[in-house]
Image 1: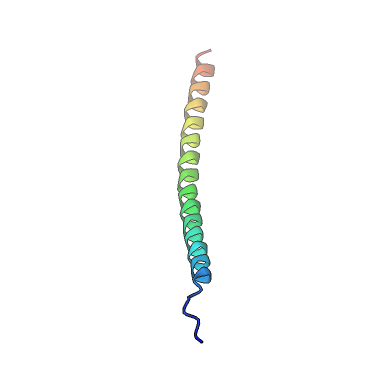
Image 2: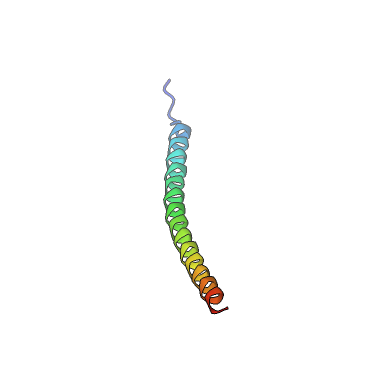
Length: 60
């Protein structure tokens, strides 16, 4: 007698691992871009605050 059923459990597990891995890569890449943007904004704010502080001190 032949078994007429297929065991797709391994296939589903492999596909889930690939999907989770792909999502993880996307999240890491997006996080890198967001971190870069955040650091750029923080640098600009620091520059503005330093300039304002120096200008205020020079006026005194």
